[in-house]
Amino acid sequence: MLNHHTYLKIIAECNFARPRVSNKQIIAFANVSPATVTEMMRQLQKCGLVNRHRYTGVTLTDQGRELATRLLYKYRLCEVFLAQHLHLPLSQIPEQAWQMADTLEPPTVTALATFLDHPQQSPFGGDMTTDLLNDATVMPLSQLSGTPTKLVSYLETPSLVAYFQHCHLTINQPLWLLRRDEDLNFLYLETTAHEEIIVNLSAADYLYVQKKPTN
Image (cartoon, rainbow, N blue to C red):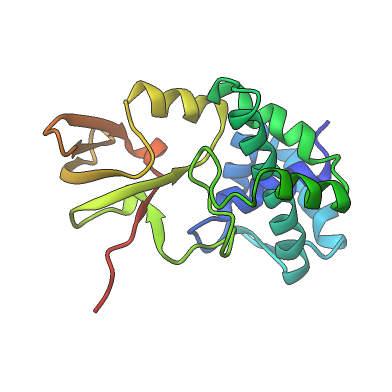
């Protein structure tokens, strides 16, 4: 059974660059029944970690955001360690990093951060220096309308890691939007090498690109 911290992590990740998280998203990422999610959201609300919104999902409270930020920072430290020092394949890192992170005590977190020379980015592009839960400089690739942009991070579930690699995408990769096909649920993108990349719009919800600066 998934613990409270794991549900909080799922909510924080799904909430990134979005106003709130639907129960449908939590069900999909937790891979549990709707009833299980409903009960867990009740428990998290009783703990003061989430606010439940009828029909529209949940948001993190200030207390929930504070705890989720600490959890994600530990998680990303472990991701960096597993990638840089154990050289694990990227697809194996998320699950093992979370198992490590959920048991780390604060002195160990501090020591690990020092050992890794205070990394600023996870292997999946996740920022470790600003607001881990709501980076205002990025948006989901699925919302892209103008060009050009740069792919800066993505949600590191094993299936999305595999999809990211299958599409030959890379972190900090410049991309241009060619067209959007809502009927087929695809985005058609172009790289600097003039190669076309086709990305499923559902996956693009969890691939993050740099927002165009506003003047």
